[in-house]
Image (cartoon, rainbow, N blue to C red):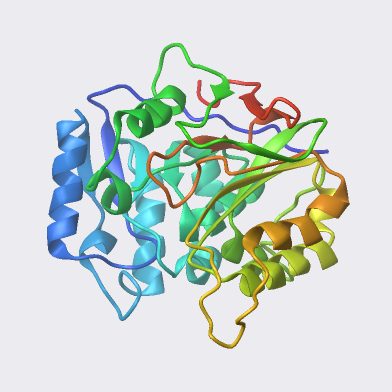
Length: 314
């Protein structure tokens, strides 16, 4: 029997947002800019220790990054948590997180890319609804559009919400028609794949699976999708939403005649016959759509529509 998902309390402008860096570090300038941007948006901001730390390609030691995240959930003043950036590193801290503490202190939690590992464990081990959305340094400090801000606010702020997810401008493509319903989960393809065979393995049974990726050549996308297919993760899903696949083009001179991303999708995803859409603007893109994970959704692939069927906050 599946645990009932815990929806965090909705935020309001003026609330305190905690910023953490569970993966890679960024520059001091970017950290300050992220602080300024969130402050301008009307939030009180608490920067975690990990935002100012670095250890090679990691924002500080595993212990420091995990402690920072645990502390943010434990801090009663902090009403929501947004990640500084992705990069690499979240799988290294999965064994150090206090899932019971997180479950007992549900908060809005926002991020994508490498943060996918945290979405999966928070959904599955803490029964927490989370938000696949923009990050403080990666997105908010750049060309962050009104569309992207409204999409984020639509799901995390108190008040009315629009349940229909619409692309800003690019066309959504139907790979397989029909309608699917289920809890929506997923994130970055590399991170989803990296959970297979671990105790943190993604459970796609009866779910709608969102997949996005950045900067991986078609043969690598092929390899990862094949692993998901061979481990029954694609077969178990009710429907599939392919998000933004930014810069996933052939580059190796070794493969002069590479398959395209579209051909890989036709080879691996299409034969499954599951309701599937492609090119939803979620992932490493701008404008970007925020998607709540751990809530029921309906995918109408014929009409190219994704609808969130329950409010992700209380």
